[in-house]
Length: 289
Image 1 (cartoon, one colour):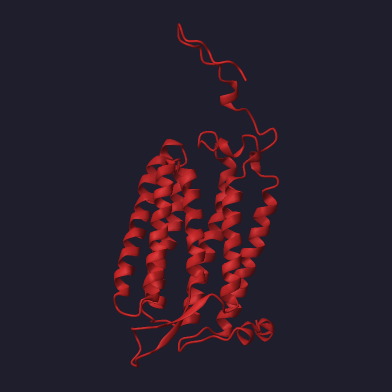
Image 2 (spheres, one colour; image 1 turned 180 degrees about the vertical axis):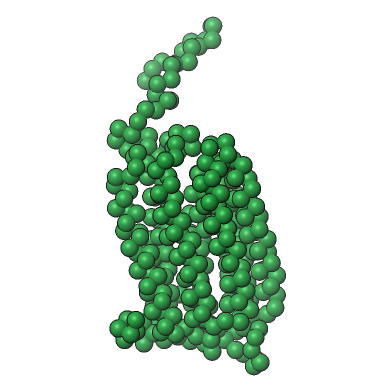
C-alpha cells in the first residue's frame, strides 16, 4: 500500500476542492476497486466468446455494467467528476463546502438496471415489469442526485421521494419477482440473489444519508463505504449469476431470443419446426416469397 501511495499522483494532477475533500488514501482504495472492475470486465468479455450452452445474455448485461463501472471509478479515483457544493448539516460554520462526486450516480444509473434486468430475466416476469422496475431505480438515483446538490434542508424531500422508489423496487423484486420465479422453477436461486441484492440496496439510503445527504462522514469514508457496496453488488452478484445460470433452462425462461440467428448451432427453434397454419375455408393462403 505504501508503494501504491507513493506512486499515486492523481490528486497532485487533479487537486481536490472544498472543505470536505477527497484524500490520497481514498484514491488508493478506489484505484483498487477500479482494478477489480476492469479485470472482471475482461473476464466476462472473454467468457462471452464461448458461453455455456451458447447463451450470452448475462455476459452482455454484466460486461456493460462492469465496463461502465470501470470508467466511473477511474474518474472517481482520479479525483474527477465532482462538484463543490455548500452543505447545510453537521457543521457549525456557514458556507462549509463538500466534494460531491456525481460520477457515482452515473454508475448507479447503469449498475442498478443491470441487476434489475438480470433478476427479471431469472424470475420470468413480464418485460413491462422489468421496464417499470428500471424506471423506479432511475427515480431513486436521480432523486438522490438532486438531494445531494440541494443546498438547503429541502434536500430531505428529494431523499424521501427516492427512498419511496427504492421501497417500491424492493417490493417488486422480492415479492412479485419471487412469485413469478416459482412458476419457472427457480424460486431458490431467485430468493438467494434478490435477497442479497436487496440487503445491499438497504444500505445505500443509509450510506447516502451519512455522506452526501447529512454530511456526517467525510468524503473519503463515504468513498470507502460506497466502494464496498458497489463491489459487493455487481462483481459478486455477476459471478454468482453466471455460476447458477449453467443449470437454468433458457427455453423455459423465454430467453431463446439470445440465440436465434446469432449463435451457431445453438439448438432447435420451435418456431421453425411448427407446422404451417391451415387457411380457413374460402381464404386463399398468401404466396410464399
